[in-house]
Length: 416
Image 1 (tube, one colour):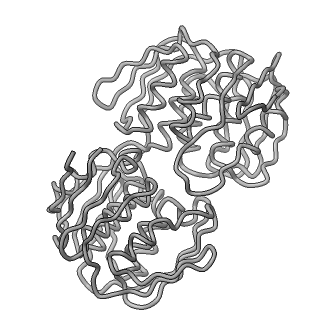
Image 2 (cartoon, one colour):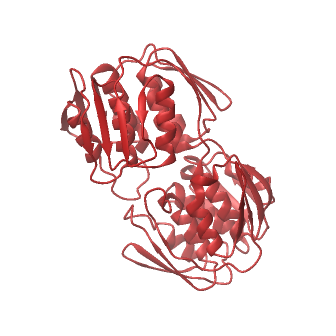
């Protein structure tokens, strides 16, 4: 996939449109397996992870056509085939076919999924919930085989508010007999968007966005047309891009409520942020101030924004304390930022960042999606030229990032 070349120091100014949410699109694509007929999903980002999910749907028999950012998915010929290990290991969210296939067909076989190496993301909460609904599960040689003669609604209490487990349980429960109540459910906006999609198909889901979700099973589902919500992590990344370059960016197609934790932290760091109904404007130019962050489940500060915020703090006055509570292995960007001159020390799950006057461009390598985004942001702000190797990680979650930043004044391009 080549490398990204950035000549830093340009102030970003203009307008960037945020695309549809990757983390909302993936479970919605999985949920399209719940019924025959053609489902239409709009504002689906063109990303590597989405391409993998489409390949998985096609492997299972779905017919998928794309027109720009709109997908037409015909689930009439879907079958619960054993899913190959090669497909599953290409993306973490591939496990989101577990719930819908089991719900519709009563059987499913998948391998344990792959994804970014940012820490432990076990399937135990997924399997606990599926078993509670009445499925038999056999785990053997890295595969999960689940069968059911009919799922039945139950009360399910998660030990931790897992996004993926909440989504899989919702999709498994929509065709179950009776009522399922999910307690300690994840509250992320992507959960609410999935619920909207499912309800459009005829499901009866209430409470999404709160810690208690109630699903009353229905006998069948129907195709629907749906538009994916904006990507709050992409929006947050652009907001920090404006901050670290002293820029003035209007970021459109945003739900401001979804990025309130990011807005609050940027304002604490001395950045001016104003909101409209569907946009935010970020104006920087003064001295950046350090800020402390602890990653938390939504509505707290998102773990997917932690690497980008570390890049900001590397250039902010004072000392910042960044605590990662979600993933134990999510500081892989730190050694690369140090190569650029950042002063960062790691103690267990905490990064202690002492701001420096400037970063200096050099060769850096991405280890995962959000780490890659952080290195691009650092390169935009750095003196001289930064070369970001392995940009395929970035392509998993950002559509044509170089073009968007060039359009607002960055000197950035990709060499193949």
